[in-house]
Image 1 (tube, rainbow, N blue to C red):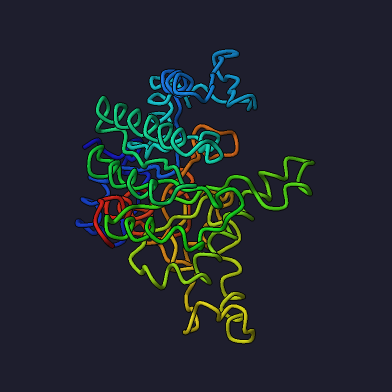
Image 2 (image 1 turned 30 degrees about the horizontal axis):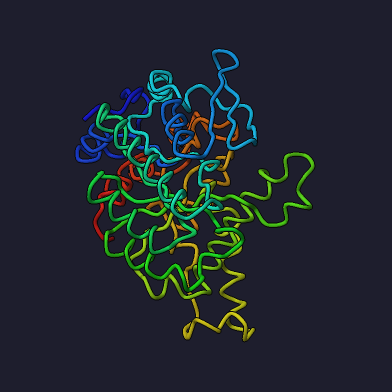
Amino acid sequence: MRPLQGCGTQALHFAGGNKNLRDEMTKLRTIDTHTHILTQETAALLSKAGAKVTITPADGEAAAFDVMGTVYRPFPTGGFDIARRLRDMDAAGVDVHVLSATPQTYLYNLDPALSATLAAIQNDQMAKHIAVHPDRFWGIATLPLAQPAAAADELRRAMTKLNLRGAMFASNVKGMNLDDASFEPLWATAEELGAFIFIHPNNVAGADRLKSYYLANLIGNPLDTTIAAASLVFGGVLERYPKLKVMLAHGGGFTPYQAARWEHGWAVRPEPKKNLAQQPKNIAGRFFYDTILHSAPVLEFLIKQAGPGHVLLGSDYPYDMGMPDCVSHVRGLQISDADKASILGGRAETLLSGKPS
């Protein structure tokens, strides 16, 4: 186990000189739960399988990332270069990256058999990276989500054969919300396995009105995450599977800040009652959230609203909308050292254990 990097005695203030807390912080691993990876080797394997994916470095800092004819720029070098990623982790004081696929390679729209093959390739590759760097990398699977039964099978394989710790889902599947009845086998499997489920937006709602100013990301991503969260609540998914561990990307979208409105809506309107016999309470506390909010006061609000045990370190590495300074950001918050320890890695150690919560 690597020590907490950059964590000298001057950086930490322990109330009353609490020895147990000092010892806990010394042993703590900083665990970044929101990172993405796609190496050139993986891209070549996806292309060989039938989905052309290329990564063309433009300079030492970024590449052009082409997924079946759609080019994304910039794709920072750390997204595909392991050595660069490790250097960036060291510089940021991050001990462990929880690897997940790039959202651009969800590829739910393809032929079912091909989609399943592409997911398996990416998961096998993640397991390969983890085997080489077991003290630096954990991983969560990508799934052929348009075929929920196949997705459940791949989740089981990924967790039992590849030692991955859960899965990353899109916020919708070809426009279908996550409360659709077809997903029941997947939710049941995720709860049974104690999977850590990370919802990351893609194919966002309202895209026709979000074409300017990069609004598809600035507003569309958090909006679609919010729709996914509301669907899980009002669709009764979280009620049927109370042990599900679901983290929402980018601070939860708008979920933590509108959850009380949802609770009020159930009380005064018939529509939210369709699948919920009892009024939902503490909706904000039912999910987990990464720390990617770009504002200390807003993150402190989230921690107070949802509880420190529901907030996990995240950077969105390597993308430019991320927070590479996530560790120093959390250390600078006006919260207790115990809460900082939980957010920096203590809670992730438990949640990503592969055991039911």
